[in-house]
Amino acid sequence: MVSARTSTSLRQAVTGALALWLVATHSLSAQDRVAVSFAAGASSAEINGTITGHEYIDYIVNARGGQEMVVSLAATGTNGHGSAFFNILPADLDFGGPYIGSEDDDRRAEVIVPRDGDWAIRVYLLGNDKDANRTVGYSINVFIGPGSGGSSGSSASGPDLLPEEDIFVVRLSDANGRLNIRDAPRPSARLVGTLANGVSVANVGGCTISDGRQWCEIQAESGGLRGWASARYLALPRLGAPAPAPPPAASGEVVTIWHVPPNDILNVRAGPGTGSPIVGALGNGDRVVALGCETRGQSRWCQIEMLTDMQERGWINARYISGHGATAPAAGASGATRISFGAGTAGTEFSERLGPETSVGYLLGAMAGQDLYLRVASSGTGVAWRLLNPDGSLLDEGTAAKGYRGQLWQSGDHRIEVSNRGGGPERFNVIVGVE
Figure (cartoon, one colour):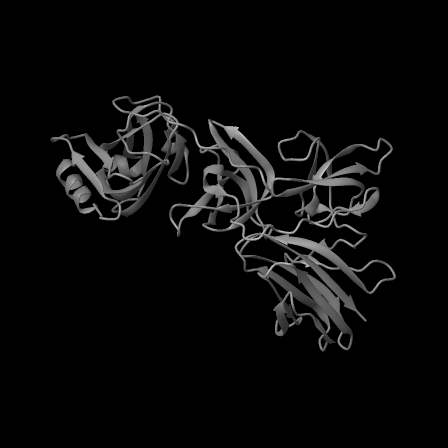
């Protein structure tokens, strides 16, 4: 019998912070039903329990059509393998639900509730744990989207779509939570990794609507994890003073494409924005003619003409234009960007943009005895830099108000690290020369 043990565990799981009330029905054997309700203003609840062998338990939650339901399960103890799963089903039915846990590897569901009514979170065992009558303890977290109150009968109104900008920030209700990143825009897609709350990400593939939910293809700004995230957990950076616009390339100027992630391409679009159709592609080092730029939202877009016989035209984000003939750095094996100088020159200047609380690294090859000049210029107050010797020791550091000029005493790759400690995106120029 599971009812007494489970009811006791559930009563002990009540916490003041979550204010969850669990009401167990009268004695049931193979199936137990527990009604879950939330205190006024609460949107999440934690449930703890145990299950054995062929038993299954339905936790009943009331939700409105169009609301988002996020449910995660973790095994907390077992005398078997911990093979506990859950489905989300219409109450009193064994089919027709939006989530089947045995088909998912991370035991986490993020679904849009199809219609008003009661929904069952059904917990069950599989494999040897089920056949050998093993017991698994578990903890379930249930979250219902904004405005949820469980039994409220008011109609749902979907959230506004996230504006498509260059940079997003992960925003979770749990400050210590992590956002699932998947290989396709749907909750059942393969999990490719997670990102921490507060991390800045780049919008690399635009946003789309899938299964009634907005998803965005994003990448960590350091050039790491890439995949699809639910837009509900993304937000625009909180800006202080507006970030300065990128310096516009002169009309008719030939510019170089740079900062495209390794093994990736830059989409050329029919209009200024990620919602415009893709009409072509460019890679690092490609040269194009800049025809003019304009600002859309917080993004700067430039119309370009390709240097081909067809002279195709399109629009790209301005952050991928090196501008003013500067030599574009190439990606280094260490994940930093390698700085190179144009033929016959001893220096270069280029622009970059950083999201809040992010950093970027550059590699500069130089010899002992050479003189180095470095300046990281920015109109913002959050930009800082560090200059490291090839052996990793600190050579100098400062803010945008301070430059470096001095003789180097080691040979090899010197590393320049630039960080944005502010609360909004910052644009900066790197000016570097070696004599």
